Length: 370
Image (tube, rainbow, N blue to C red):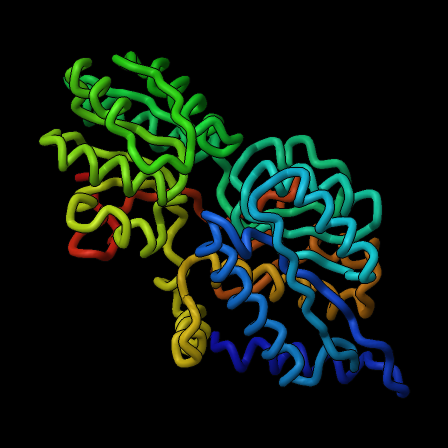
């Protein structure tokens, strides 16, 4: 199904139920790390949200109303996320596509729940985001960390059963949560780690950590953290003559990882939800983003899908009001750039979870484990 067809359908149905008189604009938000060390992901989110809103308005808006986008920058910080969430409340937004980092999403969700604002995160993986959601309007369009950990832990235990594995994390909710869950799965499968270590994100020199890996004769590192640190650690391992396999999670699914690691990143393995660009539904959206010189990476497409799903729910509800939209989200099946999806009773999406990708020659491709 093409992008134009999807939004044309919105326009036709909106025209059927639109009131005779023009109504006020509908404000929505996109919130993520628009600045700071994770800004590459914020750039993707902004690009996806802006294009989705432009497509909605080009198709006639929602129920006769124009959609206006507000951008918020939380820098992946929980306190800043709460402050930005309160700003969104003050601006009267009906919906937020965000946040990105788990700490930020979880902290902000309480604000949105209290204010009656729907939040759909295009990136948050921590199970607590939906397991402990503070209200019925909290959803995610991303795989759960515990599902990712199952895939990673079972693979580590089988593929590297005779190798010495180090588990490293950056102390964040995302990184530590992913490593701890993966550790549990790997240990249950009969494989113990040779080293479990935490590091501080944002360092420029990881030589001390790498010396520890060398002294412990580590063969494989499973890293819970983000692309910038992972790329630097991998590059510095190679520079120090270590032939260690790096395995990680979805935060390495960005070209910025290779920009930091360079050729040292060759062979890096990571678990990701299936790349949205592999879907026919996403092709025209990705092409439109690239034509404007904007990022068309995974989080641009998942953010586009978050706006797309909310807009479809508004269309079905006939209003952007909280209760009818939540009811539509819970009951509906949605055609999106990610594919056809529904939400379960926790607010998690129904699409397939995680598969393996490998970095090679500056790009990452699906990896067969046969």
